[in-house]
Figure 1 (cartoon, one colour):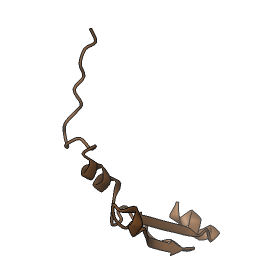
Figure 2 (figure 1 turned 45 degrees about the vertical axis):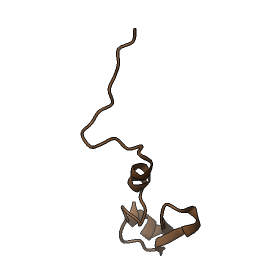
Figure 3 (figure 1 turned 90 degrees about the vertical axis):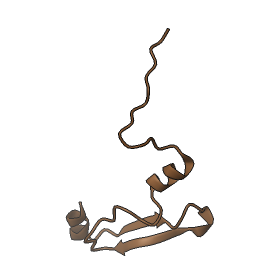
Figure 4 (figure 1 turned 60 degrees about the vertical axis):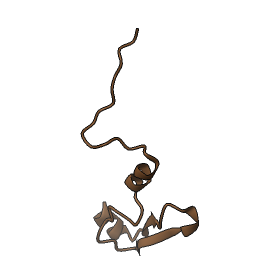
Length: 69
């Protein structure tokens, strides 16, 4: 995808949350019409958010399914 964006001169902006606080705003990871790399992680990730709220299951654990009845 990045080569196509580069060839067309499309502006590609990558952003990340600065922290769990909305007041901390966002961080610009890249702002370019010739992007070379895709950032997979920023300062505060979705996994960080899920871990802080206890919504992410532990690795290798599956939810228990109870039979109806």
